[in-house]
Amino acid sequence: MTVQWSTTLRNNLVTEWATTIGASPVLEIMAGTMPEEPADADSNTVLASFTLDETWTTTAADGSISMAAGGNAISSSNVYSTNASNAGTAAYYRIYPSGGPTDGGTNCCEQGTITATSGGGDMTLDNTSIAADQIVQLTGYTKTAPGA
Image (cartoon, rainbow, N blue to C red; front, side, top):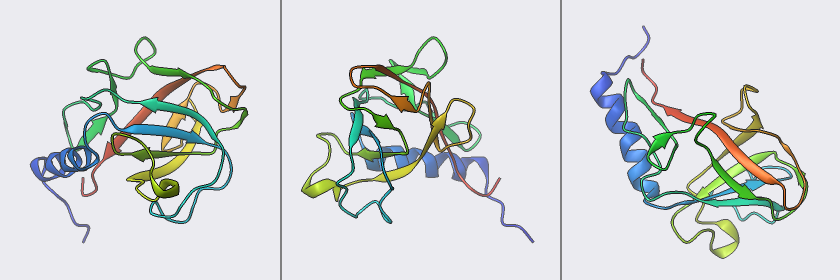
């Protein structure tokens, strides 16, 4: 039998995830091979860095929570964007608490894959082939609790 959780439990789980990361986290888009664990130091190239809003997630609903920009869910008209600091192919992301990475990135809260929009990655960008100074747009990111 498959374990199922109530919507309330699932909503509380994803809300606690966002609360634990905290307000105004830093999201880095990285080239190279993702470290084995979030607590592992990371010496790969940072392609772009975003400081997210203080209220960077939507309110949990149906066991899911999405990244929000300016208090609204990310959509084609409302995305996080920043200028790339380096050129390369976006391979993964890392999320750090407010203030960004310390000790070589060992304070990473989460890491995951990146693909272009609709590519099936944990997070999506408008384009994974990044040139220095190019505008990078975050187009999708949702956390869904297990047990539906």
